[in-house]
Length: 378
Ligand SMILES: Cc1ncc(COP(=O)(O)O)c(C=O)c1O
Image (cartoon, helix red, strand yellow):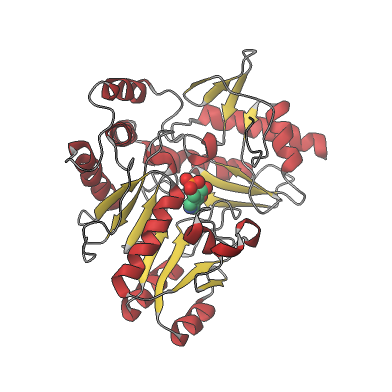
């Protein structure tokens, strides 16, 4: 048997990681400006993170949600504080798509409606409802196209007003910062307007912070720049620094009914311990402030490199757009400069999502490498 080949891969296999670096079998060292797709929030093999997982393995590592679990309670309490709204309730699951699936289900349970508004270039996962609200028909199977979904242009106030006036909306789902779509930011006023429209119309506002959350933007959640409280917030990726854990933050007016949501593995002891270790490290190492500062440093220095068409994003979630496809730049960065970066569905945009522990030195290494690669293409 072999793996079902659904992933386009480079032919480098990392076998060791430490902080922002990865090594292959031959001992070559790589700088990880991709963070394993925004997952490695506190760095590879962070000693405090490794120690926590090792200790939890003996403590027990797993038991189901049939028993209370104080580690889950701690994740909920700490995440509530980080969100700036301690009244949120938490449901824990295992992956981003599962969090989105549960958020959409909760919205529909809450108001009994069906129509969802999502946005152009948005990505929310590959499971049934999540892929249905994702703006990419190529990854939707015919059985996925059964929700009543309207995809609107991002930051288009008029299109939004028109759709809201037409019918009762169940939920609006929007990324804190669009990731896979090429790093596009919802305007502050647009998010504030969405909050107002959802409140006035009894619709649920879902902020997908799976990629933009956990400090990546320089705030714990990217929507905090707009000062709003969404009804539901989805989290995953950076939450477990590679250990699978995801969740939905749920506004206090949502009432839980036994069995309405559930998961065998969701919030298990190992996953919750990983989640606590990540929150500890983010706090102790002041990583929100660091992500904002290094992001600003990168943006201001990228502006002086010629051959770049646009720079978008906040903190350590940046999209660098070139006036040509970014694929060759990405390959040259990896094979000639030993730096991992990410692609996006906008073929000209390179995505960078490094661990939040990055320093000015790491940023300099990237800026130098990118300058060399672009000089080669001039
Ligand atoms: C914004 C956003 N939502 C949802 C998902 C789906 O997460 P997962 O791959 O863990 O299912 C992703 C994954 O990239 C994402 O970026």
